Length: 428
Length: 160
Image (cartoon, rainbow over all chains, first blue to last red; front, side, top):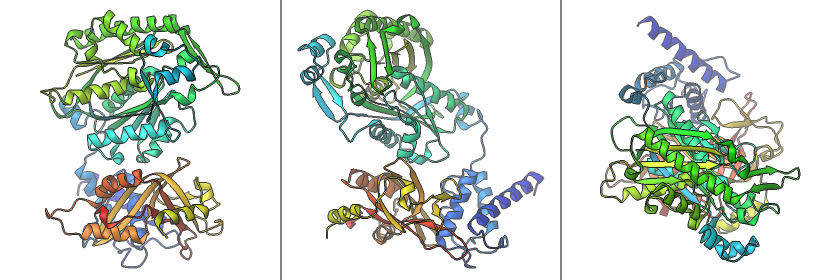
């Protein structure tokens, strides 16, 4: 046995002794070869607790399950099992995982996606009446026919959970395989934060991370960028990205202008990201990201919590729409440069959609066909950070029905949010 | 009494939405991801019901013996990890699943079955209710470990 193997063995033995000792605080530590169950020191439940203790201390998933028939339930057998498991999955240093070896660690792809809309459909007429707006202002002015609103039993967590579970099911990845969650929500104002609360709700592993990202309507793009960055450091890991908004509850306040409140729906979207270790089998690879912040138009949209916890909104609709269209067109130009592909070759545009009218104006200005924009704001409303993501989900799903779905589509994403903060990305 | 009525009745008994009120005392854990325990002298009751928002199962198998554990998210968003599921109906259901003859000769893994097909049924159920009990503390150990005594809805043979 080499010196390093000797060291591994003694470390594994020591760890096994500690895990067993924690279950037997009032016993002298048994011998390394004693069968703990046969000797009556542990029952089968206690033995499972020891396995969970080792799993937690080593981060070896599903440690000792199934325990080989005939193998004693001893400290030495635990240590041997630790060493065997570590030999099966050699530790990979950042940037040296299988994906990094083949692709320089830079390729990250979407393995699954899903979205959930608020379950109640509300007509534009009804919203106009509730928000004291002139008849047809939403339908004719903004192009909104209906909104999808959360029921009383739905919130950011329930919608986020539904979207995440759909994405995990599509990716065929169980929730315990998720190494970190990157989450964004503007409307979830509680502590623990949205990421922490959703982490619990999804029952992710205690050793998987939970990170909140801001950015309002750009939050999903920023979250995808953060997750991609984390996966480049740890290419063997799996990330879950979730955006979720329930505007209907947050904006249902006396000082929120009706023409603002009436634009928003409730939804969540989720994506499972992995390093792309091979040339195929993925829906789309995340390309480059672009971002910035154009403070010139910062005053066109603002919101603040008043001392009584009410929400006050400052909203200059026309100025905001103009700024959004101009900025999103600029993002498209930058994405053309970054991807080396003109917008005429783009299969889908997954845009933030403040309202359908703004999307139509943008399509005309940017000279892109409307049918390449999955238009969800006409029936769902502005879904905040989830808009881009739901649009991306619809694009990826639609692509599956195309003649050659194994060829990933070229997708441009672009969004603007209060600030004016902006971001974009391309996928191919 | 049907299951719906039974769960209604159990809602009227001891229930808690969060960990602290489950047994009226602090819960402790020895390892991250491990089961929780309470100090035998500090608990004000030995069983309590709770609604849960999500559940995941783990199945530990060795030498023909099967241990079923569960993770739960309570109404408060707090989680209970690695709860031994000692509910007789659920243990029988798992045993029936493991021992049922398979047409292909290859049985699907019990954990995957529980966490996909059965989990989906639980999530669609109109109620999700668990009764958490305290195991009698072993002499000298000074710990009463939590157990998942009853899990509703109860499984039925039609789910297999």
